[in-house]
Amino acid sequence: MSEKIVIDPVTRIEGHAKITINVNDSGKVDDAKLHVTQFRGFEKFCEGRQYTEMPGLTARTCGICPVSHLISSSKACDELLAVRPPKGGRNLRRIINLAQILQSHALNFFHLSAADMLYGFDAPKGDRNIFKMMQTHPEMAKNGIKLRAFGQKIIEELGGKRIHPSWIVPGGVSHQISQEQKSNILEQIPEAMDIVKGALKWYVSQLPKYKREIEFFGNYKSMFMGLVNKHGKLEHYGGMLRFMDWDGTILDDGVDPKHYQQYIGEYVEDFSYLKSPYYKPRGYKNGMYRVGPLARLNVADSCGTPLADEAFEDFMNINNGKPVLNTFYYHYARLIEIIYCIERIEELLNEPETMSDNVRSYASVNRLEGVGCSEAPRGTLFHHYKVDKTGSITGVNMIIASGNNNLAMNAGIKQAACEFVDGANPSDGDLNRVEAVIRCFDPCLSCSTHALGVVATKVEIKDMNGKTIKLIDRV
Image (cartoon, rainbow, N blue to C red; front, side):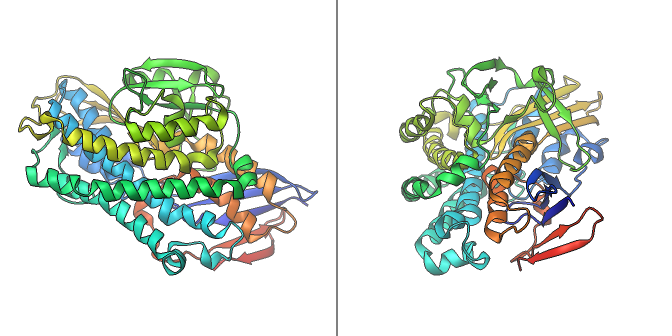
């Protein structure tokens, strides 16, 4: 009889989800699906609010990356006002967004994912966590904490607090920064750079141990999407959308994000609350693409900063200059982006305009529709607002970065489950490999519903009638 393996919840991710693995009569895996089990509802309950409230409201979508939502939301509001923030305001927005990306990448790599490579995917489940790392590799654990704290402190210096700062507003930012704040950030850069360079060196040294995981952790042909600047370089705040095929062919380039609906369709499956966006010209399922650090490096011609470009060159040589297709390498791309973030933050802080007191443009509603787009840690984020003449919200559409990866995440866990999981006798290590594919993507699903401490996980194998025939307790 056909069976179903349920992993509930998926561990070491930001938010809550489960995975079901379908096993056929021969004991072979047929399919696997990722189920996002929380419904957020922001698109609906924001209706009727004033546009000025939207950055603060939508930032509550996420407790890990609220700055990303503040950026995209404020950019959408800029469009409603028909204004462009002054250069100083744009620079400060860029800095806080880069700090957000840096701290989130550090969280994923050191706290959620590194333990798998440090101890092995088959290590006892009690060892695959940051607490074990603190015991056996305290310096590595401390470095992860320090690097994340660096990003968070920048957010606090600029925005006033680390979570849900109200400093980013329609038209720019609410106030300039001081010379003391600038100095506080700059003096921490050398240590942060040393940490990430060391982490990248360690990561690359571990790769030979995980050839099979690299081969089957979401290694498939897909498209990639991300923002690039006018020179084709890595971009996180402005720029235009670029769509690239698996072989490096650019499908669409220079796409203004406000026209996203001409290129991106949205579908909803009955097994998940997470949308499944797709590239419209190819239709649903065939239009699967990936976003986030791997995709951003693939679509970019270069990073645009010295140390990041050195690492970028090594990264692109993985596949002889063509797009890197292995999802396992999301971690590689993540570390390169941290290097880029540190270099760009330093560059932006040293631009004279950054210290200007002209950081915000003022206006009333001049347009009834606005789209804001930026690169969040996990990928391209869209906020699309419609208002009436009084500025009251009449419609909201949001494509969350993790949603853009939904089709790709499902394809990745199916490939890993088919390769690693013995449907008749699944091991804890091989189920962990399926979960680890999701950790590569680093989805942010429902950050306000985190559990505290160790999450108990039970894997149930059920027959076609729903009767539990085997239980694997992963407490």
